[in-house]
Each structure stands twice: as structure tokens, then as C-alpha cells.
Length: 146
Image (cartoon, rainbow, N blue to C red; front, top):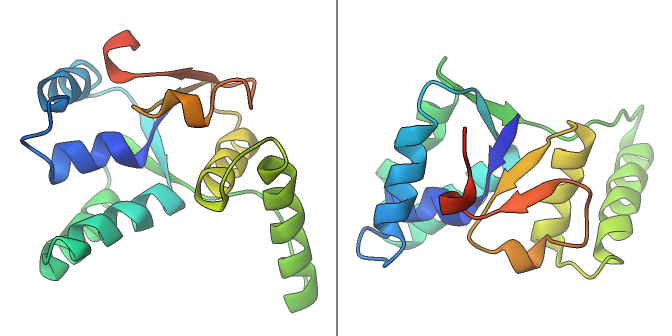
């Protein structure tokens, strides 16, 4: 399965004047009907971008749209926790393991989720944030063939 990063979704939903908009739209059209994933962290980050643009109602609409049955799966990280201390210990251990690969927290929680779901391809315009830090294939939208 392929997963899509926040930057691709933000260009699609918000930044229509971005020079990468046309390539982003082409990529999304090419994978229409193909099951793809976005992490819950990507979705929340996207909603933050939309809200920061002064569109809180649109943020809420987009959030709920992604949870409707369609060809997009919301990906949650895999781990179990019996109580609060176990939860935070598991979360910080998993995040720190990726941060130590040279990542910031936001990218680390996204990568943790992708790796725990065994995603094979991650599509992002920010390939340098993830390449050489994971075994997942990291590519930009024009390089993705469905």
C-alpha cells in the first residue's frame, strides 16, 4: 500500500497556487480508486494547516470526509498499553528510535505509523526528510506509478 504525506494533501486542499499543484492533482487522479493510506498524524497536521488558513469549518469537514468509506485508510500506529505509564513509555520509545535516525517529532510519529503498518511506498514532496531513514520506498508524486 502507498501512503501520502501531509504536504501532498495540503497542496491538494489549500495551496492551489503552489507550483507543484498540477503535478499533485495529476498524481491523485492517477491513483483514484487505488487504496491508499494517510496516518492520523498527517490528517491532524492537514487540519491544522487548513485551520491556520482561517478555515476552521473546512478543517472539520475535511477531517470527517477522510473517515467516510472511500479508497483512503486512516492509519494508526500499532502498540498496546495497559495503563498511562505504559502508553507514554511505548510512545516515547517508538518516537525516540526514529528521532535518533535524524528526524523531527512530527516526521518520527508518521514514520513509526508507516513502519508499524508495513507500508511499502510513501509519497511526499519532502523526500529528504525520510529517505535513508527507513526501508520504505520514499518518492515524490511524479515518480509514483500506481
